[in-house]
Amino acid sequence: MNKIKFSHHYAKTPVDLTTFKSSVISVCVVDMEKLPIEFLFYDTCYYDEDGIKEKHYPLDFKTGIIITIFTNGYEEVWTTIRRWTPQKERYYMGMIGQEVEIEITEEKG
Image 1 (cartoon, one colour):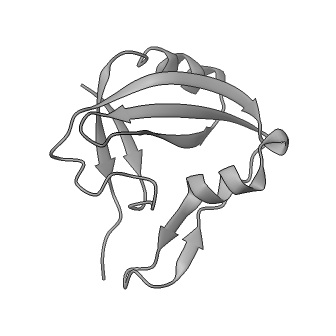
Image 2 (cartoon, one colour):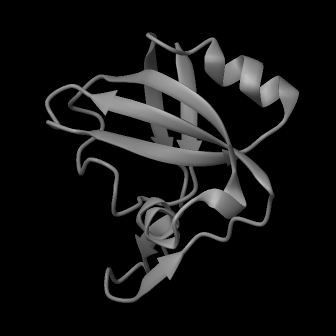
């Protein structure tokens, strides 16, 4: 099964990803400078290990890939932005319509 990894549990992600199945429903290459700041804040927001201080993952690239994910049982879609490369574009495009495993790699403590 394809896997999408996250370095943090972001505010946008479903609380219990192990309970529900997720699928990629779209992939779009974008000019990062044209995205609204509100969308970037939504997509990059996570909290410190105490769950108190809001932080934002830095996006330091000009061209990105927006991956839209549907998590069955979550009742809405959510996104992730990744750095664009031709290889990543092909990789993520190949996931459209496919079930994916969502892995959160952050370490606590």
